[in-house]
Length: 299
Figure 1 (cartoon, rainbow, N blue to C red):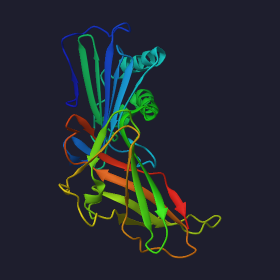
Figure 2 (figure 1 turned 180 degrees about the horizontal axis):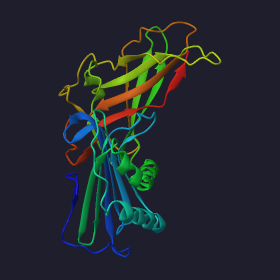
Figure 3 (figure 1 turned 120 degrees about the vertical axis):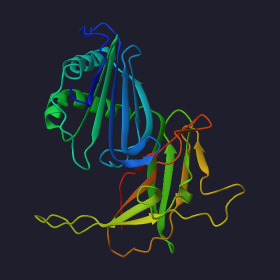
Figure 4 (figure 1 turned 45 degrees about the vertical axis):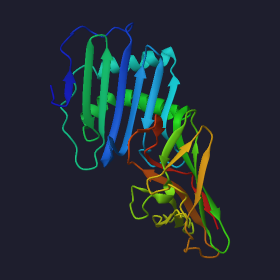
């Protein structure tokens, strides 16, 4: 058995389709940016007894625009639970090919399966092609469940951005609690402006002229951080927090954008990125990670 594969020896019996099960699916990559949080971190837990799926994610694996971060939860139909159990029993429980490990940038995947007295844990990464081939069906199923849960937020933050023209052009970043419980997060106006993983504002790029048959060059992004308040209110500090009830929003304007050229098309994306601090503050869920708004095209 590979050192990255652990199984309880308390039972050697085969799992039963009638017994409740718990399946945990975690994905991590990148360097640690906070307590227990890497640049890409997500955890999906399926509990068949409650017919419940719970997801916590701190960033889209592909930095997908418009994707919220935080916690999500929903019930799963019995047919889906049965399908997940069947795939888990056929892939997670049996011995796997030897984990070969991966190089820099590999994503680490952890699967934990519990049913009755049996407990199994498998750890591998995106460089273990033989294991990925065995797990492909189950991982696809779990990824689809995670995508579906994005429509059922509990404590979640979503970003949007607007362009503000005029003599001092800039952008307005809005962060909205789209969940059904209170959330908190670091006041984005006091985040550093020079840290690629801890900042808030907008990133903007000039859109090249499209030419048939010619591949456009990569976009060159310019960061436009949020403007700090001229006068801090009593007690305000760089580590001050924002608390939002369900449906509430927080908005802040960026510094003046200097790159505007007449007759040019641009693309802007709102950004909130902060992994620091505890996962909870005064019993309120603290959102940690990075979220990106839908792209905004303008001239």
